[in-house]
Image 1 (cartoon, rainbow, N blue to C red):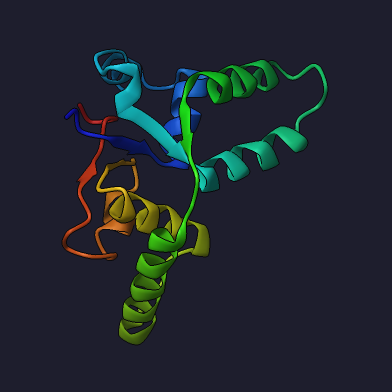
Image 2 (image 1 turned 90 degrees about the horizontal axis):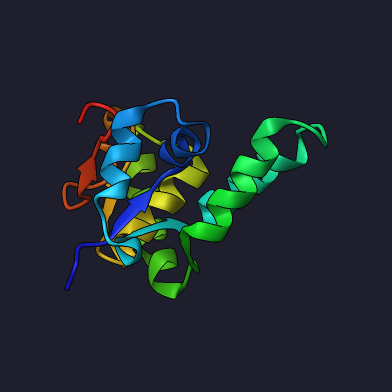
Amino acid sequence: MARLYLLDTDIASYVIDRRFPAVDRRLKRLPAASAAISVITRAELMYDLEGLEAQHPLRAGIRMFLTTVHCLDWDARAADWYASIRHRLTASGQKIGELDMMIAAHALAVDAVLVTNNVRHYKRVRPELNIENWVDA
């Protein structure tokens, strides 16, 4: 079975605005079913879309991206991972953003590699969280 790659919101944004060609190249090499986003990332992108003017060029890019990439629903398993992550990070004083914890939990719940340009941030989550940075690829 092919490895699943969960694109976090910054990587999704890079794909949408084609800011980093290395990210586009890496994504194109994957089978379509191997790349996905969390519904949390979809929510963040939809929030961004709401703030754009009707004629803004990124509107079309966001809509196209959301119709072409698979979106995974957040479920009870992800919620359980989130509780563990939040407890651990809060207890150690290393808490990160709520949505980032939810995306990391989702990656752990579906045994996906989390693709992010925010490696230092996500490395605090759990040692078993697989992380790749395609910006540096």
